[in-house]
Amino acid sequence: SNTAESYSDFIHEDEHTITLEVSNEFGCSDNFELPFQPSPKLFVPSAFSPNADKVNDAFKVKALAIGQFHLEIFDRNGRSVFETSDLNSTWDGHDPNYPNDNYPYYHYGIRATGKNGEALIERGTITVLR
Image 1 (cartoon, rainbow, N blue to C red):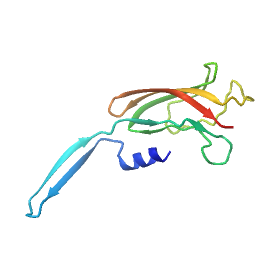
Image 2 (image 1 turned 135 degrees about the vertical axis):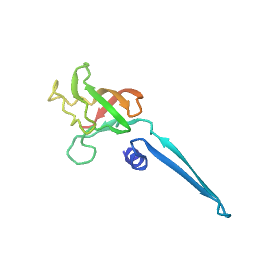
Image 3 (image 1 turned 180 degrees about the horizontal axis):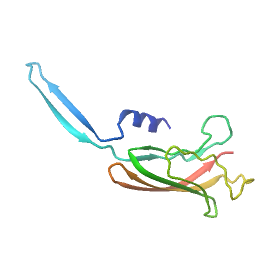
Image 4 (image 1 turned 180 degrees about the vertical axis):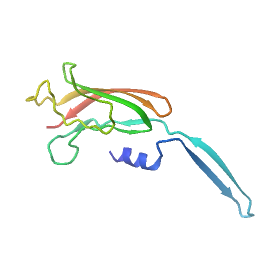
């Protein structure tokens, strides 16, 4: 999503310093520095279409300021179909439990820790548009 990309382009993921410098028409100036660590964010798509058209062909979580990450995707019976601790990994929609099935709904669970130590847990549904 563009939101995740533009947000991460604007904010550095690591702790950094924000500086405010002010001056007036009389030549007086001052500055103020503040250390800043962005809050961790996960951007999870709700659907994707693995149809080889090169648009949303894989499920991928985008993140900001995440230190540790674990994703698991489950089929309708609660069996794991995909698992990773790598934020760069993608899921292609393949279900090893039902390789010839076109079932569109899967569930995910994410456990993550932000670079600031904050714990994140997210659960949801993914629609696979075949």
